[in-house]
Image (tube, rainbow, N blue to C red):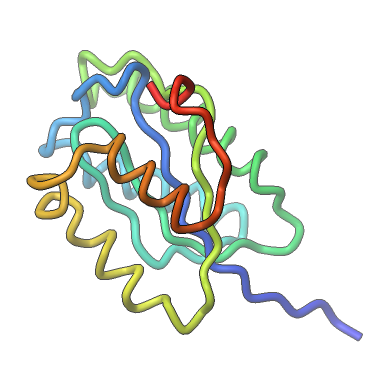
Length: 148
């Protein structure tokens, strides 16, 4: 028998100390670079978006890819790329850790819409508020002192 999977993830992480260093003008180039990493890992990108201090990735992962390794590779490679190209001059790196949440495939369209509308969404809610909401929604236990 072959291997069949369908795991839809929303991966979320922020800049170090949530510094607002991801200027709108450079985000599209960064998103394309991250898309290339995902393609090389045989992952399917459904949507990537973000604002000044964090990003969201909606992807399904190839069964041979470990989530922690994928996020580590994205962070390391994108940090190098940002620094080499000068894409975001004040970028100091990514935060330690990340959030990763699974979804039923039937939720894909709503999830894509949610990620697509990040700028509008963050006119009303901070990243911290959004993260707490996601953690609670997915039943993830957390200590608020580690969210800063």
